[in-house]
Image 1: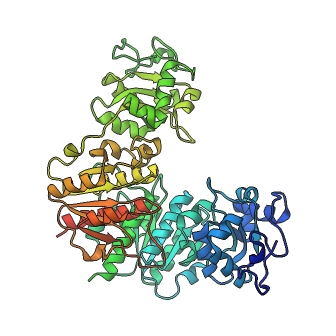
Image 2: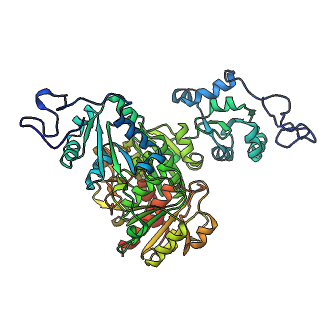
Length: 291
Length: 291
């Protein structure tokens, strides 16, 4: 059922009638996993359908909270009775924004959820990425470029680190993972909704635009000539991070202004992608702020 | 079957007869998933049996390579025919060390493997952790303490970052994840074999010992009064990292010399544990090295 903005006197402000706790006004919970509404949401777990429908799923209270902060992004919200009780503020907020809220049975939630232990909240959202030009408008000082990054958890974790480090944009080049993949959305912990994300640009085009806007383009690579400690990071910088298994290909290394490695002081062969990215981005953040 | 150090003239140096490529000398491959040898290894996927047998499994070429670098740690090696061809140097090395190498069928490997796409190599290893006193012997300058960290992937990733940042030891306090958990071993990418790891000490005891050895004990927490950018990290430092969901409890924060947060410059609520730990450890590594 759909909770509209219309509430009756004496009824609970987020649409559940306080006189009959546990029951929704004007409807009952979705229990049929084969209902068109559930199937329409469920298909968004597949990339092809996300692209076709131009929608994706944001799961869990944190992602839903951040999605609701952006006007018009949340299109529908599915919630279990239990999640309603735990997060009434999210239901209120959705209702106030005119977002249809559907009470879902545990079975329906399992169908929509992509986690082992569903937290009872799944939002259907409109795509949030922007064109490269728009992502780089203003005067970006710190940008993270993911080139051919394939693991959605890694991509999401880098987005979260980029957001935390105060980056102005995240660029996912062509052949990178879909940022709307459920794992990526979860790993980003809401950051997908926080900073401009752009997708699909070829690396070369992205590098050209970044440089035109006055950013120095640094490729992060274990084979870099310079280490993080001996490059000056005070100026506007774009970091390119490569694939988790094979790093950055020659042609991308050649495009960059410099190739920089995170120094390895111990016996580890390398750092994982998300860790290395966080260390690079925070080094930039620090250099840009601390005199 | 077991490949001993005895090789016949004209036979392949790592025990596979070159005259009958694909066949092992003196034996055939393990195909029975119920054989005692396979069952004895398989039970090491459970913590209780690891503790009882004082052994664990290290999976994949990287972990096996690093295990083989430590004398006497690798007790047995299971390998598929395909993995033999891909990593002959590991088989040679194991054989030279007198480590029994068992050729395993794909089915047996699937039984021993804890990954979705097994890479065909699993070593049975003896436990490598050391007592706290031993881990802190010498003059440690950088130590990572994991207090109540429960996620094995996070713990392994922090171990890897600690190793890369040149830390002298990793302390897993009581109520932390078992470092011999398959996911932790994999995420550590060999670092479990690189630096002294100690397990099971209560946080209080660990903090006391660290301080006695002249280390400043810093708790990493999002609620810290100081940020990474305004503490002096040049001296010997131990970082305490807490549980991924609820951070560090009050009593641990009270034990620390200071509570320090990674500054959040954007809208992210927090960083994930492994990312935050990497940023802290690298800040220390840099401050201890760069004048």
